[in-house]
Picture 1: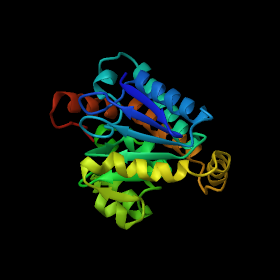
Picture 2: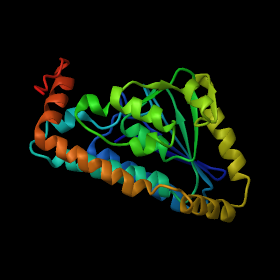
Picture 3: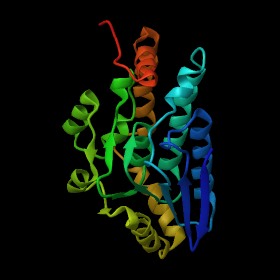
Length: 252
């Protein structure tokens, strides 16, 4: 799987590079969880910058892998892998800055929603297309990015919003030209890295401790409905239609 890690001056960059759209396989989600966890455990690090190369920040799970795997192994694996990766970002021992470009969909929302700071390139879109694919999940994380009623509308309609709109809600620290995205993230990272590492790590733990929602438990609750939907067969039809580039026939 395509992940590059660079560390300098107390800043660790975790870079996703998995063409064509940075969708991750089951193994990829677990690997990302390990990479982020290890980055936070490195005592020389004060902050992690999570970004991507190529087209898009993250397009969620690899649906083609899921449809090419018999039984429910890929489904269970993807759910477990996403849970591990989202949890790793949230519980990273140092702050995580997400630098997002082009689009952030599905599982990408789980990563960004659990990050501490977000910067985005102009025109970047954020969305949960799960309903279109017969699934649910990451509304927990979307609700950390947009107001409650907007979150509900986005889940039901599967329509995205732009970085510019999210910046008006205070979710995004800065919206910059694509060419300036990494620099914008690194500027914030450098400010964090200039502080006491001991204090920053304590600050991260304390802020997690006062969160009003247990994001790990909340996301697992959502996943239970995804499992139920798969048992009905509607999810399989939705994913087949996606892979075959046709309109899904749900029959309900």
